[in-house]
Amino acid sequence: MIGENTLISRTINIAKSSKYIQKVFVSTDSEKIAEISKSLKSEVIKRPSQISDDQSSSESALIHALTEMKMNKYSPGLTVFLQCTSPFTTINDIDGAIEKLCSENYDSVFTATLFHHFIWEQNKNTAIGINHDHKKNRIRRQELTEQWLETGSVYVFKTNQFLKQKNRFFGKIGVYQVNQINEMKIDTPEEMELVRKIYSE
Image 1 (cartoon, rainbow, N blue to C red):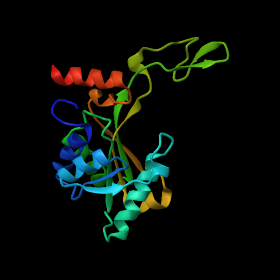
Image 2 (image 1 turned 60 degrees about the horizontal axis):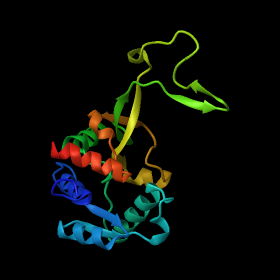
Image 3 (image 1 turned 90 degrees about the horizontal axis):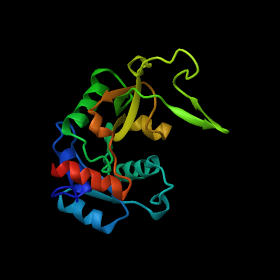
Image 4 (image 1 turned 90 degrees about the vertical axis):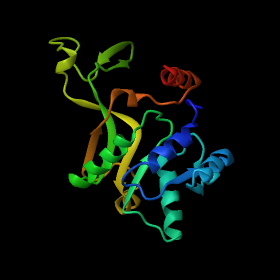
């Protein structure tokens, strides 16, 4: 729980508050998540076990869900993919990403924050700079080439093209900038506790 809501209920409620989202579907193999989703009047798509483990891609779940929708005579022009492990997603993030795709003629859009950090990697027995020259002319962090850090919270894309490409990034790709707190994701118990502390303050 985050405050008074579960992660899935918070995500569903935000999606339902969007100006543009017409239907909310939840893909899951969990009976508990399915029960919560149905109580919030979302449509549940039972995800097969073979695409529900930690090694399964988000694309496989999306393709399955969209195929199920099509079989039930529903084919959205745009798909908005939200991940409930991003607890700080806002309505503005969702609607802003949709508006960016539509107004600027993108095929797919994802949320991100501006990234100004020095990246290193281990090469054999030493570390080397990736996005900067660490040996000479080390520039200030603010002068690094503008880069984006994908938040993993909101993805918007044209449905038919996605089903052909089988990848959420295709065609003309747009970036919608969100607040830095959106970088936070919940993948571990420690991250859950940190988010709970932020919410309680």
